[in-house]
Amino acid sequence: MEEKYLGILPSHLQQQGIRLHEYGYYQYAWGYPTIREVVSVCRDGGFALIGCEFFLPPNEERKEPEATIDTWYTSRNRGEEWGQFVHRSASELIAYIDTEMVPSRGLSFWSSPDVVDEEHYNLLSELARDFHPDVYPLLSLRSLTARVMYSLVHLLEPPAAYEIVTRIVTHRFAFSSEQQAQTASAYLRQRGYSVMSFVDDAPRWQLQASRDYLPIAWLEEREKKRVLRMAERLGGEYLGSEFTEIHTPSGEE
Image (cartoon, rainbow, N blue to C red):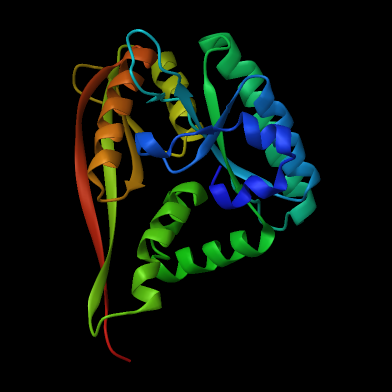
């Protein structure tokens, strides 16, 4: 959760928030089960949850929090009323935490939800479509939010000519069975990836999972670590990654 949204929480939840800024994550997180109360307060205040990132807390082996591969995303459905989206997003996030995170991670994890109000959500959606309508359907709103905010500097004080660059990373995996590949595909889509699958000559089932990313060194390092852990967790073989840039030119009117 961004610092600007802390004010919607009662004081006891603000005090229990874990500040991650010193580790390079400009957000707050909460342990379990406190995160369930945080989500409920956001829902009751009319705020939607569009994503959640999870961290393993420091211990004897880790000197700082470590982002996990367990990332949850959602977006507003076409024609969905804001109030319906608010309640659905909260219910789905709590269900994901209870049914996915707790069984796999126990109680030793921190959750950092992405909170947004309706006005902010609509603004970000419009900006994202204006930037890259051709790739917009491939990208989760949560990742688009980061990319849009990163690009806003050009809107506030645009130079005479510049390019907006969208970077897409595509990871390739191989699996020994179709069932493994189907399970992995569902897992990746739930985490904001666009997935394509096919059978190679081996034969093995290959998946290509794509998402956008920002050209920031520590974010790229996190993505590299995340994909290796994903391959191990999904029981597949990591075949490598490819990076593509989409350039949108802009200049003087």
